[in-house]
Image (cartoon, rainbow, N blue to C red; front, side, top):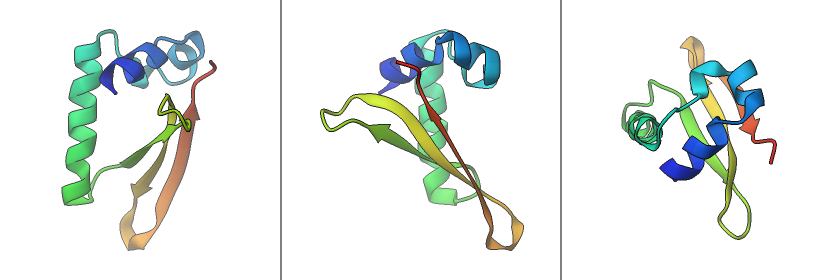
Length: 81
């Protein structure tokens, strides 16, 4: 998964519109994935769910960011390819 996240993050649109989601190395992507997986136990950080094609190919994600009062902000990112 880290390799797919890393490669998709290098897209020129990702660099332009969401530069904080660009991972220059696969290791950077793996560290971020590890952090995001840890958010499921605390429920304090973003809850990020991968979007996969039927064949298992990673194409993006959907996220829910919790706010006070039990509300969430929902967002998504689907790669250009």
